[in-house]
Image 1: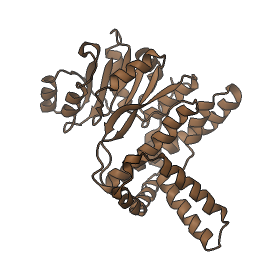
Image 2: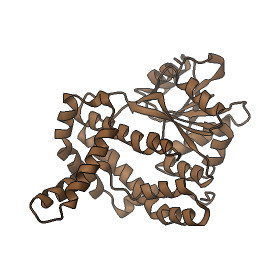
Image 3: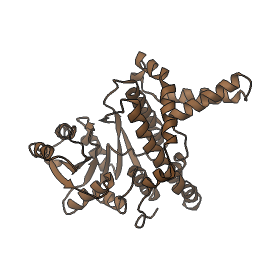
Image 4: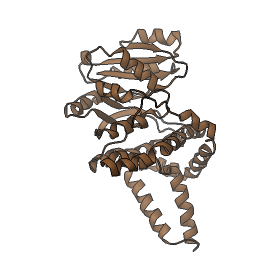
Length: 343
């Protein structure tokens, strides 16, 4: 296995991440930790050289995660690696993560999504972000697999067959939200994506309102781009060639973000209570809120969760703010170089 950790100016955390990536219950001669170092300081590169990891320095005029991954795949093209694991620069794998990936790979899966979960819950926004990710795990990953459909990808804690990843990454370079394009290309081939609910990878969550807003601005921009370019293609693929997973993913691009939908349904329910709208809105809101609560793991049910819910109006405000930041010129940042990308 190759464990790729792409990072751009992540000097403050990358050394610790690299060290912890070596702490696996897996034969040490069967995996390599590779830091794809884009614009790291000389001091950081020196520190990494003193750790038992491989460092591949990369540099681009316009840096993207996809470009770093492709450079890594190119560098190791002649090696005998079977699997590539992709982590973010703040991710920490559970000790048995590679063992579970290996088991899924030997079961025939070429694309595997691990269970990314929160590393920190020390602030209200970090806790809300943690809960949001677990709801996504329940709906779009574990829930989809229970129904016999493919898991969604989330950008890190992912593993792929080496040759399959090279094929999927071909033509993906200048793109934000590369995991969405990777997922679409995989599903277009009707290749299943496995989800490993017990293969945990800890991920740093946003800790304040400003970071939350900036992150959501980027996410909403990516969603708008993919909705515009793939929503109709998804439904066409369903009727032409029965690509259910592909259509489902395209449909997800049209979904209102969960935080925003909570605020919208709450407002509509209030109007229904005043007799200004049909009572069916109350029923719909109740069903949706129940579904969200059922999707949250039991460990989150405590006083901190109640305090986090009380701060939902603040999160909704910043979600609206992030949408207002999307401009026509902003959307152009998410344009994909698709000359060699056929979906």
